[in-house]
Image 1 (cartoon, rainbow, N blue to C red):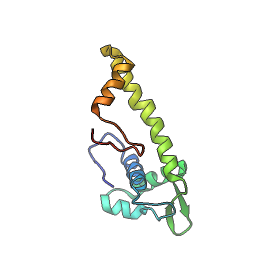
Image 2: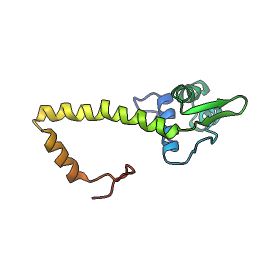
Image 3: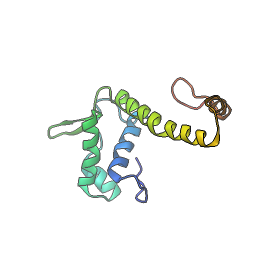
Image 4: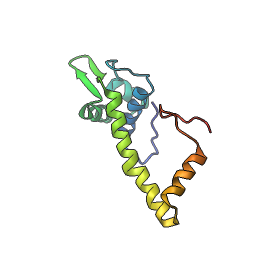
Length: 131
């Protein structure tokens, strides 16, 4: 996990997204213990309350669950929860922005599809095939 202190994205959001990335990459699996609030705070030299805010955001979303006196753990189906959330964000934020810009430039949806084919293909697991 990495944090960018100069980013416009709040630190607690970066913490949540970093943990999500570690879950998606398999670094953290279902029922694994997640990083503790104190570990995150010490590693990145941030306020423990900020670290807790990032962890609690993931608890609220069903990605992590607390075990009394033991810390936070990766929830069952966490990967599905993260993928669903990120797909919606991708659609609502990135694709909507692309379509708005394409409209300004007179680029049709078919042109966008062709451009995607020119850039490369994505395999069934979401990875770039390198074309």
